[in-house]
Image (cartoon, rainbow, N blue to C red; front, side, top):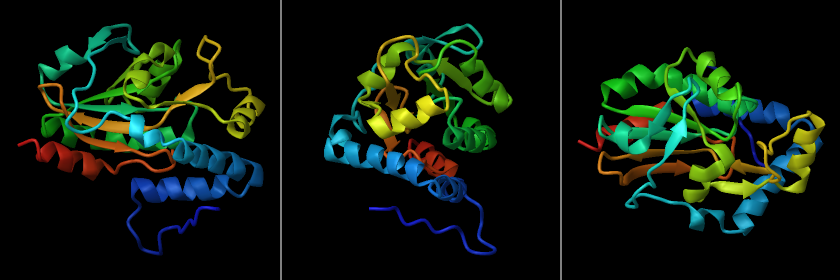
Amino acid sequence: MAKSLKPPGEGAISTLNSRLADLLASRCENPDWAAAYQQIIGTLHRDGFYEGMIGPGQAFPDFMLPSATGLLVSLREELARGPVVLTFFRGEWCPFCKLTAAALAGAAPRITAAGGRILALTPEGGEWPLRLQQRDNSAFQVLADIDFGVGLAAGLVFKIPPLYRARVQGLRLDLRQGNAAWCLPVPAVFVIRQDGVIAWRFADVDFARRPEPDEILAALARLG
């Protein structure tokens, strides 16, 4: 069933999700793209994808990943400095992720003032994590989740269905990231307390839906 898309009315405040909805509406004007998009959502819903995701009340697995600037970043060490806002992106190539990254960068000063530390994970390697970080003036650290290790541990990684895979191949995008799999992470955001336990999660198999920065700030505020 086609998704109903309603752009914000005249005079409405342009939120992140209103901008994402506008982008989605423009993409869905192409029936092949719309069919590929619907296949992802339908497949993951039928597979009960949410049941395998890590969630509030659970400890987020510790990790150490390379940053876009060549450092090794440990979740445990970051948590020693304060709560962590951990966000998963599909990649620098994704226009929905670019809009989300810009909104997150805009909210970064408020998130920092609330005590949060932003870590953004992407399955991409090479130059792409740095491009994503530089695009938003290094407002947060971008880490390379090579081979989807952290995404798999969090239950966020899925195999790309055939229609969407054909679309990205047609654009000459190779999402295999150096291995034989064609996978992506579901975009998700976790607010993790200093003891490593997840306090709040936003995850949606619909990659055109993301949390508003104010939702993240509200979750940080509830940590007290």
